[in-house]
Image 1 (cartoon, rainbow, N blue to C red):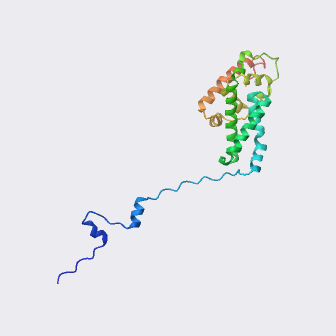
Image 2 (cartoon, rainbow, N blue to C red):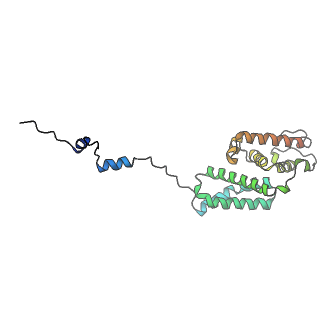
Image 3 (cartoon, rainbow, N blue to C red):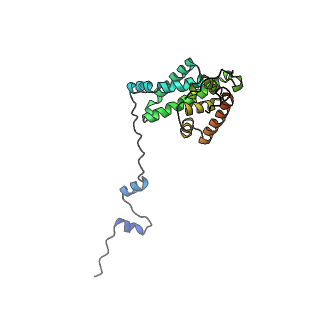
Length: 211
């Protein structure tokens, strides 16, 4: 008697035909490879009317101050601040932390100020148009000086908001670059040119004090 024929499984039988047999489960796995799960976005910690009201109480002074120093018009600054907080209410769910809220408010306020200035460009004056004032005693905060406020208000819009963020909000050039979405080198250039222009007018008024 000859040796019994070896038992062949389905895969072995299919080899001769050039077709390799796979189970339905294996075929499904081959067609649908496992993919990395998408990272879940954390829910915003700000979801209620009380959260929004708390942010307004904490941040309205900062928003209004930036707008007022930039616009030099209390009513316009109030309207701009209201517009910023309305925009915040619409986007509150996208903010992830108190630091994110502060950054977002500075960014939106700064850009709204620049947009406002562009619409009101005809009312801007040049440095040479600002009248000379009597000598004043230099203060520790340059922006508290009426003279410097006038001169800062006469700067071009982007340079003006850079100066305000630097000397009022005490932001570094890197932080200003993040808020305004511009290169750090551009921020530093705005500061250098603006301070040179301000010194040219102020040095005669405050006896050579440095800004």
